[in-house]
Image (tube, rainbow, N blue to C red):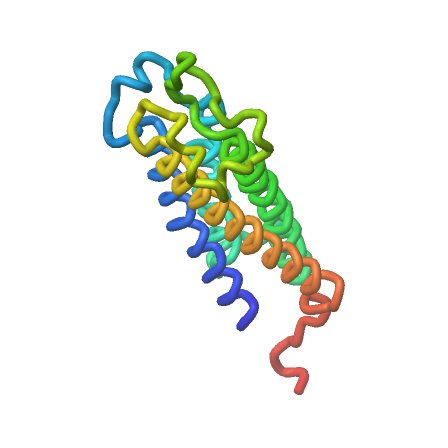
Length: 201
C-alpha cells in the first residue's frame, strides 16, 4: 500500500513538471517577449523540435494521467485472479513509465544540443549561429556574448530557458526511472505473489 501511494505521488509530480516544460518551451519562441522573431523564423532551429511542448509536456501529461489511473483502486480486474490483475497493472505501469523516460529523454537531449549550439542571432556578419564552432565554450565566457547584437540578451535568454528545460526533463527521467524500478521490484520480489484470503487465519 505504501509503495502504491509513493507511486501515485511520483505520478502527480510529473504533472507540474510537464506544465512548466510547456511554458518554458513557449517562452523560447518569444525572446524578450517579442513575437517578430518567431514570425520571421529568426530562432534557433532546436525550438522547432517541440521538445518541451510536445514530448516533455503534452505526452508526459498523458503518461502521468495513465499512471494515476493505473495506481487507483478503482481499476477493473483484467482476469479472474486478483494477483494476475495486479501484475498486469504493474506491467502496464512499467511500460508507460518507460515511455515517459523516452519522451523526457528526448527533451533532455534536444535541449542540451540547443544549449551547446547557442542562439540564432544577428552579428556583424549577419544572422547566424555565432557560437556554433565554440563547443559550448561561450557558456562560461560571457565576454563572447557581445557578438550577438540582436535580439537583445538572447544569449542569456537561451541559456536560462534551455537549462530549465534540461532540469525539468531530467527530473522527469528520474521520476519515471524510479517508477520502473519500483514496479519491477514489486513484480520480481513477490509483492503480488501472495494473496491472503480472509478466514484462513
